[in-house]
Length: 485
Image (cartoon, rainbow, N blue to C red):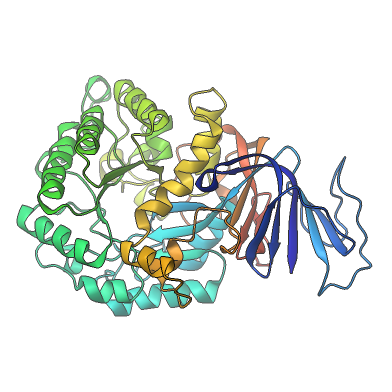
C-alpha cells in the first residue's frame, strides 16, 4: 500500500526539515520526503480533515484522482494543504491501567484514545495490578497491545518490586521483555540507597530511570501550597516537596553517571536544579505536562475534582517558569501523564478524590491553543517536544549501537530508536495536525474510559486530524478508523 501525503507543511526536527513538501509511504515505511510527483497509478483521494473512505472528496485544490487503478499498485493521495505533517507523536508517560484496573482503562481503550489524540507511540507506566515488575507482566502488555494493533505500546518496568520502594525489580529481565525504561511513577523511591542502586543498574542496561520526584513526608495535601490554598481552605503541598527529591536524584545521577529523567516537573526550583545539572554535563532530562503548562492553582477554586493532580497545579509564577523553560529547550519533552479514573473516584469531595487527568486525547490541542497560537511556543519546537525529545530519552544506548551496526532483528528498545523521525526506511508513523480546526472538549466523546478532564466545555483550536501507524491510517478527524467506537 502506498500513501502520498501531499502539500502539507512537513516538520521533521530530526532531519532538519520544515517546509511545504510531500511524504511518500510505501509498505509501512517512509519511502521519501520531498517534492514527489503523483505518478499515473492513483487510487483514492482523501482529505486529512474529513472522513476517510473510497471516493472521498480531497477538497479544493486537491490533486485530481481516479479510482480505476488496481488497488495493489495504486497510491492513495492525502490532501494535507493547510495541515502540519509531523513524525508520529510519542507520549513518554501514560497510564493504561491493564492489568488489574480495567474499569479505569485498558490497553484497547487507551490505544484508541491515543490514536484519536494523534499519538502513534505510548509508553505505559507500571502501576498496574500486578505491577510491571517482571518479564511476564511486561510480556503480557506487549502481547495485548499487538492484539489491539492500533498504536505502538512500550512498557516501562518498575524500579522496585510491587513499587514498594525496598527491593529492586529484575531490571535485566524487564529489558529483555521489552521495557524501555524503569519507574515507580505514582510513588517516590524514598530510600536513597535503593535509588542509587537503580541508577547503577540502569546504566549497565542502557536505559533511563524515570523519577517521580515527591517527598512523601511533605505531600499530605490536596493542592499547591500558596495563596489559593488558603483562600479555598484546602491543605497545601509545598513546591519543596518536589524540589527536595529532584535535588537528591540529581546528586545520585552525578554519583552514578546514569541517565535520569524527571517526570512531570512543575516548579521553578526543580527547573533550576535541572538547569544546573545540564550545565554540569549530567545525563538529566525532564518532561512537562499540558495541564501544568495551561492551568494554574486558581482553577481549583471550582472544587472540580478533575483539577486534582499529582504534582498539583502550581501558581502562576511556576507556570510561567515552566513555559519559559519549554521554549528555551530546558524541558526535553511534553508528556501527558494520562491518568484515567472511574467516575466514582472523582465524583466525591475534593479531599477524597483520586489524582489524575485523562489527557491523551486533548494534549496536542491544549498545547496548540494555549501555547502555540498565542506565540509562546514555536510550532516546530512543539513538534520536537513530542517527537525527537521523547524518542531520544527512551532510545537504548545498546540499541543505538546495534542499529549503527546494521542490526535487522530489532528489539522493542531498538525499534524505539527509530521513532520520532520521517527518515526513509523508518516505520511510517505520522501525525497530521490542522492548526485551524476548532472543537469543544466533550469527554463523553472520549475513547478513554476516563472522562476526568478539567478542559471539558472549553473550545480549543489546533487538533490532530489524522494518525498513521506503520503506514496505516488508524484515526481521522478525532475518530478511530476501522474499529467500532
